[in-house]
Picture (cartoon, rainbow, N blue to C red):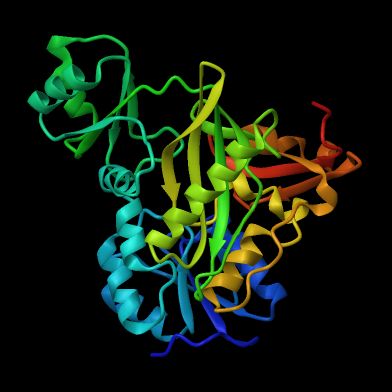
Length: 369
């Protein structure tokens, strides 16, 4: 097994069959690569655009080995796959990002400890494994605070805001989380949420897209604006530097996103890291039309051992990306008729509440300050 640069005609293996895998596969096809997608769901959106598919569980060692042996490099579109799965894949094919980066970032406690070791601030936090731990964590961090599962949480799943102390509810809280290991995070009085989407190549090269501002509704990303308005150039540079330090420390290859809180104190801006996503990211969807190289093309370039592309915004324009959640995707006809709107639908069958069905991107002049 060698980790040499891919050539057109090679096969890229993608673990996970959601919309992120679908868009990676489409970008890979533009470079003349074939794609083999591995996912457990027969209705996976990425299956529709793949040259080859494997439908099997993430703990099927034989299927994983056969999949990895059939491709030239493996990547993944989401972080909630077991470390054991990543280790099996890595024994049979080059895996990017690496298994250590995956395991570090898929556990909120491990992730925050890693970030703090780099001297980068996060929300204060405490591990919570028992009801007594929760009492101690609340005493240390105060309320309000956010109680979260350490693993397998996204779009607001696996978390609950605690606003006041309720002594009799400790056991009920633990039952609500199904006995999973938890983390309590102190509340950060942030002004807004921002993110950096960036790529690191096999040779250590680094390219970041512009800092984004993100708006969430019901814990789901609703809107991304680029460039993030009203921030100082120093803050924007600091955000990109944080992303680079994290990527370098993980020996990361591929695209990652670093989600941050912007806190304003006495007129000064500072950044607090919320989470790392070791993959292409929803807040980077704007790059398909809005950047010279999309995040998906950049990821393909990085994991293939190719030079990274130009991450600049097209024409220096501002970009707005809106997610289409649930029934919002039913407006597809009107969006197609709207001049300048770029519609992306993910090929999902049922438009359930809270389900990301697509997104629409609009480009325009940068608003005057």
